[in-house]
Image 1: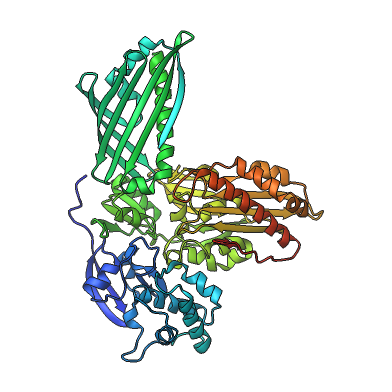
Image 2: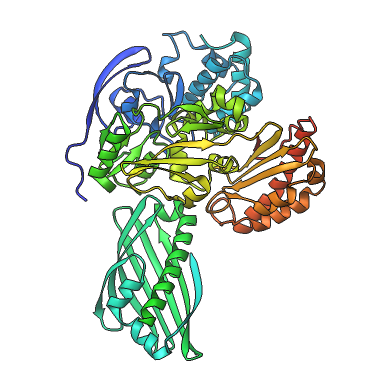
Length: 165
Length: 148
Length: 303
């Protein structure tokens, strides 16, 4: 079977962390590669590459997706949020503050995915119970913390603010 | 994976033995075998096997080596091949034992194989099942061929 | 391989257009919705296609609707939509509840019901549960439309009766009647479930079970109903079933086909089937008595 000679090229118009972005991508481009390599946003990580670990989590229209297994073209016309979009200049997002306060970051590799998944959770359920946090984060793996401090941080953030700003 | 089966066939061991060496007829009996040719008589053969495991298509050239020959009693072979398109490597060993029974034959098939590569790791359950189906189909076709 | 080989992306706006594309491109094309299984196969290099035919622009394919006593889930409905569907929460609450626990939250936002069923990975919660709901799948092609019972749709691991020119457009579920007490138990440590048990007992005014539905999935090549269990259970009270739970579970487990794989040996799976069918009976019995045991077992989700 000959390899395709003229793959689709798609023109995307989306927002990334609140800023409008236009770019041409081939149909087969993965969102993770576009974010990291075209836009220089290295927060989302390629880890398992099979959508089970959550290190590549980004939010598309508020919904967490595995950027490693998501075509960039699906983000056309949508709002993408990466970890770089959480802080407002020097002002950290309350979730980021909570993570620091509770010691929920060690090597940092899972952190980007954890923060964004937590944000999606709090946007949906502003004061989740620890059980709900555990259930929601089931697809975000951490090798360092043992999860307890992550859950504490998210629950505390929820309780304190009733959701992130 | 490993599949063992025992078949009763209506032809005596001699006729069965002749059939087993008849390359064109055997190609028709082996599911997924699209071609085969003799490289060295009774020693080496080249074949091509195609199979579908779910949505995944496998197509590989097989290098077949006959390892044991006991006329009208036992035939053992080894086959290996690789599908470069999906990086799957197949290695198998098949032993056929023939006994006379009631004017016909009993054929015992013992097929053991490995699939290496991603397909082997992910498709383990599906591969075992496909192997069993293939051996059963082989048995049915062989029975038909032996009749005709 | 982490990058995909190049392909073209088609975005047809109708089933007819999809059909035309399939006819034109055949095996060079793959149907695409969420891509949560397809993209993995493409990344692994196990599948090579020239084109993806995106189903998400075909109108109506993602709808969840009621139809003459049944509920129809459109093939491109995301698991997340199923989880939040008011219609399902009312008519088939267990379906909405189980959808909440499929895979992980990211897959639930992107993956679709149709994709899950059409791929026919044996480790599927939905296929297991839907079997207990007498699910019927609708397959559309240019040659016409046909309906296939889920029990007949799945032939084996990753193998369905869907022809290459057919598109799975929806799943029809038969909600259990009022007076049905049910539970779904999902067990496993991996991303995909190792065992799923769906038990529904419809309790008549006389307190007798009529009928019971038991589906066991993920442990064998296809999800399975347990007709002997269902026959045994019919006519008995739920309390009686609970009293005989161990024996009933053992018989059910013995009758189920199990396949060894990375989730465990065939024997292990049979063992776990026995354990979890017993637990399912106990939970259903407690629920029938108006109690919710909030049972907790390691690596298990109870819905």
